[in-house]
Image (cartoon, rainbow, N blue to C red; front, side, top):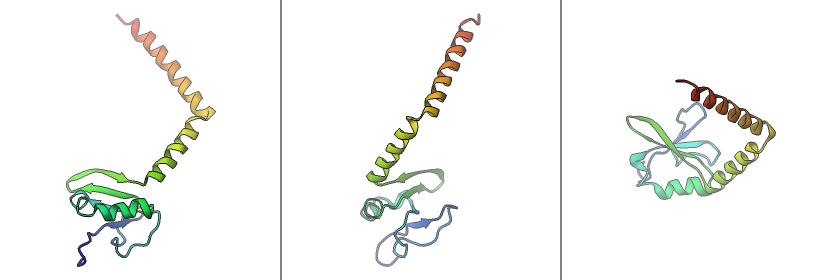
Length: 113
C-alpha cells in the first residue's frame, strides 16, 4: 500500500483473505499478518486488537504455526467462560473419573515385575 501501512488480510472462517486492513470493516473476524511485518505495524495492530476488538493471526513464512493477538477484554471474557464451564458438575465428574483411572493404572503398573 502506498501510504506505508502494511497489508494485513482480513480472514473469514475458511481462512481465505478478503481485503487489506485499510478497506476492511471493523468486525469480529480476524486478520492475518506475517511476523516480518509485526514490528513495523505494531501500532496499527494494537489499534485493531485493543480498540476494534479484532483478532490478528501472526504467521511466518515456511512455518505452519501461528499465534493470535486478542484484546485484554477478550482474554478476560474467555477466562471467565472457561472458569464457568470448568465449574460444572459434568466437568467435575470427568475429572473424578480420570483420577480414578489414573489411580487404577498406577496400582496395576506398580505390580508389574
